[in-house]
Length: 88
Image 1: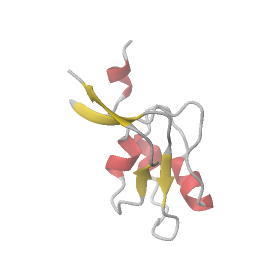
Image 2: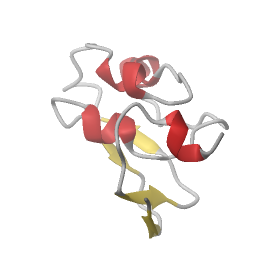
Image 3: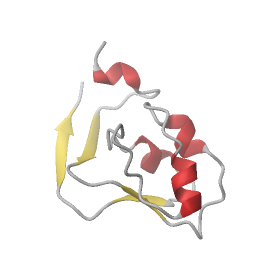
C-alpha cells in the first residue's frame, strides 16, 4: 500500500502543507459534508468547520483533498511554508 492508494481521485501534483493545518471559514460553510467524504483519513472536517476551528487532527495528511473538493471554497491552508510534491 502506498499513499496514492489512499486517495479517491487521481492526484498528479499537489501542494502539501508543511507544519500547518486546514482553516475553515465557518460563516460560509453550509455543512454539506463533501470535505469529510473526500478525506482519505476519514477526519470529520465538517465538524471542525462547524466549530470554526482549524483542523489540527494529528492524523491529517494536509493532502488538500478537503480544500480542493469544497464547493464553496470554505477551506484553505494555514499561513506556513508550502512545498511542492510531485506525484505519479
